[in-house]
Structure formats: structure tokens, C-alpha cells
Length: 149
Image (cartoon, rainbow, N blue to C red; front, side, top):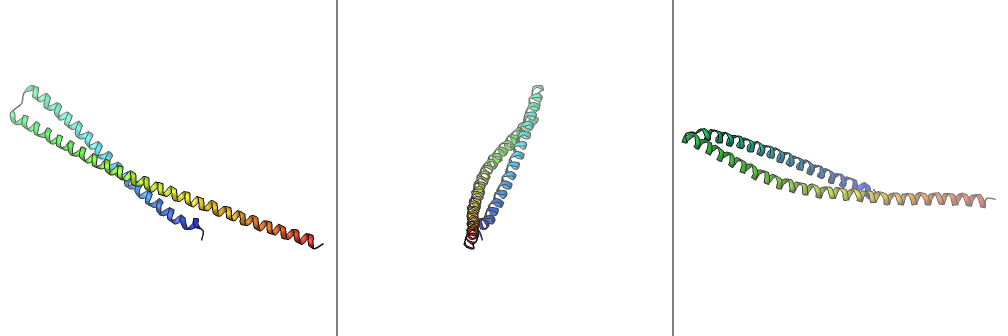
């Protein structure tokens, strides 16, 4: 069996591992995008709630109502902080998974180039062998023609 033929399954396994890494990276990037959208929603909701608090505050409000607004704004601030922490964590996971993918991609490309190099070498050897056989055949024909006279 040729070296290139033996390397092809190894290259395919590396390509499969690369595809798994791409899939993992894609999932992390989608999760990151979802959490970023959720953060924007929380920020918009907080801004709207703060606007309402300001609006109601200018007209005057009872102490219990003021405290409820402040408590809820504090809860929204906590949710925003948690969402920011989650985003930071997922960004780290994305970076890790991107690195894994890059390593696997590099390996797959290297194996592909190795297979190509083996195939080129094998083709050159085959071409030389065919040329040698044609030369031998020509020489034997020449010998037969010139020695049978």
C-alpha cells in the first residue's frame, strides 16, 4: 500500500476532528450572541424603567413606591452584572474553542500537504518506471530490428 493511501484515513480523521471543533466554536459563538442580545434587552429595560422612575419622581411618589422602584432598579443592575460576567466567561470559551479549531485546522492542512507530497513523489516514481519500461521496450525493438537482418 502506498504511503499516500495510508495517510488519507489519518487526514480524514483530522478533518473530522476539525469539523467537530468548528461545530463547538459555532455553538459558543451563538451562545455569546444570545447573551449579548439578552444584555442589550436588560439595558434597554433598565433605561426605560429608570426613565419611568424619573418621570414619576418629578410628580412625587410615596416612600414605599420609591423604595420599590429603587429595589427593582438594583435587581436589574444585578442581572446586568451577571449577564456581563456570563458574556466574559463565554468569550473566554470562544477564544479557547477558536484556538482548538485553529490547531486542528493547521494539523489537517499539514496532513493534506503531506498526502499531496507523497502522491507527487509516487507519481514521479511511477512516471520514471513507465519511462524506463518504454525505453526498455524501444531498446528491445531496436535490438530485434537490427540484429535480425
